[in-house]
Length: 411
Image (cartoon, rainbow, N blue to C red):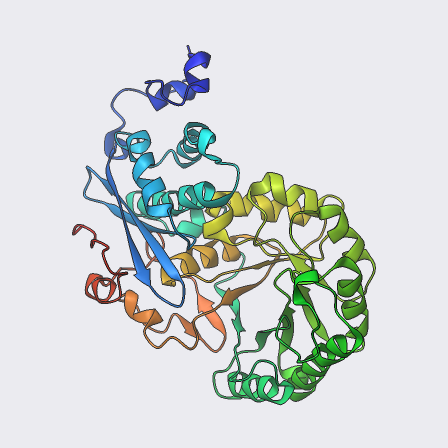
């Protein structure tokens, strides 16, 4: 019988197996799947973002690797969660995920850094489970719709305020690197600002952003889809005016035009324009995304998998979005580990539009793993190897670790 009082007490001692009802036919001897977690370790890599890598070790000698969304504090949060998973079976992914959400509720596990830390462990559990069961991770979240995932390149020009500079970078990324999906920033200085703190766009500022959109879209033509990111920078009225002003151009989507907290305002902006609006990287778990999707306040949902809850939670978000015929374009600023975890889920959902790649200017991104050519021609092939299908290069991890971090133990 479950001790419900212990579930409410984050300091209570109990075994996680009490949380699940008895499974018919399950005996004490579980054979090769009777595996226990022995340790959880983290390290932080100094990439174009701080990449928090997570490893889950087992008594079967199988080690899984995951990634938590960047930011301070996650390694300490993960260390505090270690006692809640050591001794547990890594195949019980859903149960362990809910367990961690429950145990960390006092620290805010419904959003923010805590759920991102849980996401890192959850991804590592998929890597472990795939290796134990000898299946690729996409099989654990439903099988696959596609063998490769379309990748869009988040581009940064030399002078992002200059429309011609953005257009030149768009041409280079499309013609030389082979991407047919790209994104540029619009929350860049125009030289016409009076007070950026009030989020209001004056007429000349709107015109400057329209100039960027026009030059980029006309440069690539029908060779690439082009999205533009606002990073929550504008008022509702300014966002509406900007979205309306770029309607004549073939914009893939306009991302995060207003602050992320008020979804009623987001709904108003989305429904005011024919320009597709993409939102979601700052909205946590399926519960947060529900308030975007159900009122149809978003045209394209953009969860960041290592941030908003992990692989299975992102699959649940995608299923909810599919009920409203909304496509998914995953936000992603991760190392190869988090990127590949996102690719496995993108392969397993029907409504995947594209997956972001944010490190095209970082020459050693792929060096962190032993596998080569992860992204070719704007596509990411989904491995058939067990788990995530990637092998960390610990020498490369050590070379690029944040100062003061400790390297993982060998597998």
